[in-house]
Image (tube, rainbow, N blue to C red):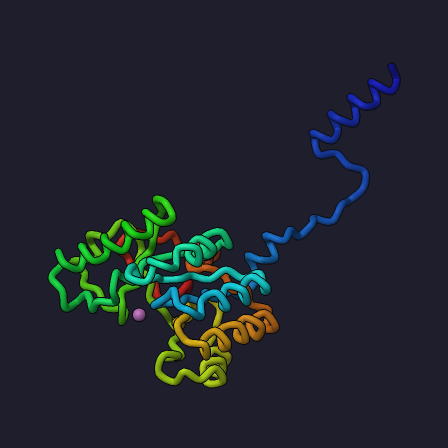
Amino acid sequence: MKRIIAAALALVLGCCGWTTTRQAIPVSREMREEAAPCVALTFDDGPSCHTARLLDGLRERGVQATFFLLGCQLEGNEELVRRMRTEGHQIGSHTHDHALLTELTTEAALADLARCDLALCTLLGEGDYWVRPPYGAVSDEVRAQLDVPVLGWSVDPRDWECQNAAQVLAQIAREARDGDIILLHDCYASTVDAALQAVDLLHSRGFEVVTAAELLRRKEIAPKAGRIYYQGR
Ligand code: NI
């Protein structure tokens, strides 16, 4: 009986927060992550023959990125795209065939975006497939009709132009700050090299590399449909 009374008393005292020893408040992994500076790596124009190597490297490093895919390149790459999803990457739309949306009528631009969205839904199931318009160009009229956010960027190493890993890495090393969204293209071998080296460099500086959605979440920015986000600041 004494033992039962003691146990009941301990339970009551415990519930009331009475403790005889002071305990350090543990710092959870989540709290450390929230505090770390972070950036999002985003890849447009894929999937391509270089994407699998990029996914391998990201998996080795435990990093998730964001991929804005072209609808016309999904056929034949279904397994690769499913792998992106399985490995936790964010997947979005970069239109069906890389049209400059501002040269189309509003109806044609929306039809193009709907075609890519449908292809992604067919392959991966219903989801929020954020949009990155080719060249970052989209009219206010088209944006107003979207039911997902639009993603811009704040660091552009122009990897497609130089196709030089050292140059791309150097620009990321120079410019990347907390909250940046970095624009890359996973259709160049040089970009895959640069991106993986950039992850290692950013990690060595204490940065987390996360998806665009996760970047905004950590910065307490609630993404809204049709609104364009250039950075998480
Ligand atoms: Ni593009």
